[in-house]
Amino acid sequence: MTTVVDESNSGTRFATTPGAPGWRWRPDAGGDVLQHDALLALAPHVFTGRAWRFTTEVERDYAQLGRMFGVAGADVTRVKQVHGRVVAWVRPGGAVPPGTGADAIISTAPGSVISVRVADCVPVLIADRRHRAVAAVHAGWSGTCAAIAEATVEAMAAEGIAPDDLVVAMGPSIGPCCYQVDSRVRNAFLAMTPDAAQWMIDDGVERWKLDLWQANVDQLIRAGVPVDAIHVSRICTADTLDRCFSHRAEGAGTGRMAAAIQCGPGTATGATRAREGSVRPRPAARH
Ligand SMILES: [Zn+2]
Image 1: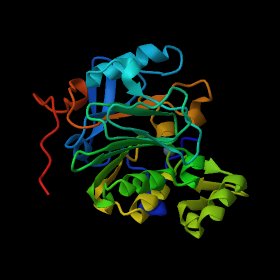
Image 2: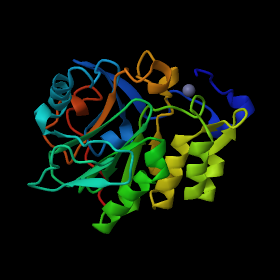
Image 3: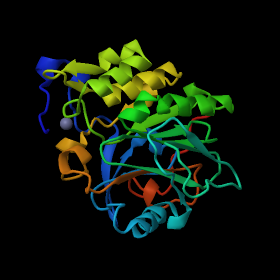
Image 4: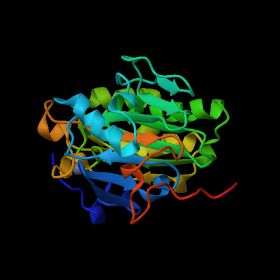
């Protein structure tokens, strides 16, 4: 469960490198949150850690999450995550009805905050360099198999937000070092695309290690996102239990981590304060 693949033996594709460039844990009043510099330049965002659980006192945790962005907890958009390919939209003046089943949210409403919850599944946050939209994606094995990240980029592209204007950050999630799957999962992926074989390595009889990070990176690239605009934290939840929750390592009763992002500069406070004195994202380069 907590084996770390030796980089020298496995090649970089399946290696675990906690703390990839640009990622930093930042102390917040509620506990440490993770951010990526390139995404922060475009949009306030956080990946929460173990200080929040989002299980027992959910509304209290959303209230704390909302405070980091200057909004009420009830105004942090969330969906009923169903491990599929449905994308929900938040448009100016609109909202996602409570209980909506989806695994990705796109917002074009300035100031709005959208979020997903994970505990091993891959949280993907996306911002547009031109500040027109942001997205939050929940990609477990099933959602990854349904290409939810690709569907999200395609949905944005259909509304004129070009994939090569996007910057993507993938937060802590179970890594290829720890994510063993069986033939049911492998066959589901192979039925989706023959490319899936390259996301798995043999791990015993009828068992494979699945690289959800690379699967999502490859989908994003296929959808047109530049490879150098995709930032993977490479923090494996099962190997980082001091910071993260892991369903695989700790069981179903463990907590959840939120990934949240705000459209436009908004009125954010804590969620943008990555460096001294900075309470807003840096202005984006003009195109
Ligand atoms: Zn691991």
